[in-house]
Length: 267
Image (cartoon, rainbow, N blue to C red; front, side, top):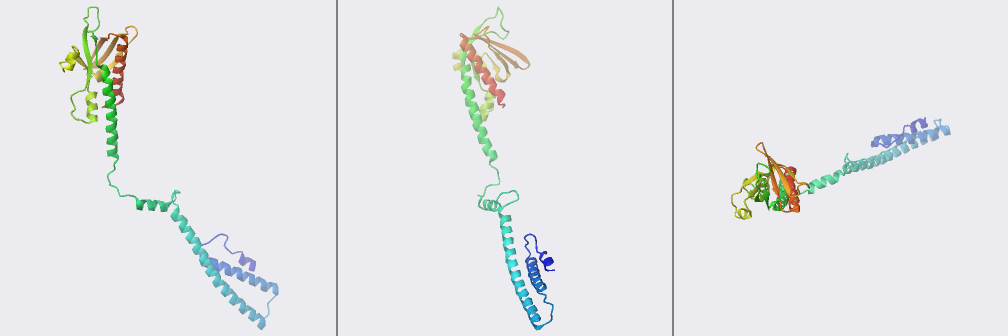
């Protein structure tokens, strides 16, 4: 009988003090009953009654102590569980640290600064692009000979012209973005000579930089560069003749680089 009572002790930790106390009391009772059974104490003598009374007092005292001990143990377990749940969140991150970070975080405006930061980055990007482009177009300022718009023939007359790239007048504005847009609408322009260019005279003609679809240089005619454009549905070829092979090749590379910048970054 005592063994069956002792087998009812909890197999794992529990937080209920009454459960701990009940189990301990049952265990004490089983031990005492075992001792009575082993000693064959079945008589009703005064000595036996005194022993039984002493056993009841002992069981009562031990049960009170067991209840008190079980209450302390359950309180410790409860405190440990509360500490673990407050320090660790379900995701594994410290929950207390999150609360403190939120408490000490500086008060910020409800408007996100992202748009402002992006505008600064965009402006700096435009600045770098415009500076690179304006440095490139300096290489297009060159004097050379040009065939007429009708093309290269045996009877064609070749005249000297001065070439340069100019930005459009609109849109107005001093920002780097507006400067880029003006270059995006710029034109490859040519004048009678360099003096006419410096005096801002009336140009002889021009081609939109965006309309240029091909720039050709070859070893068969190393002093020539052909600029093919498509504007207003009309295909046009400008054939330029430079004094030296290296000048022609360099000018061709510069114009292709300028056109490439417009293709990479749209307006």
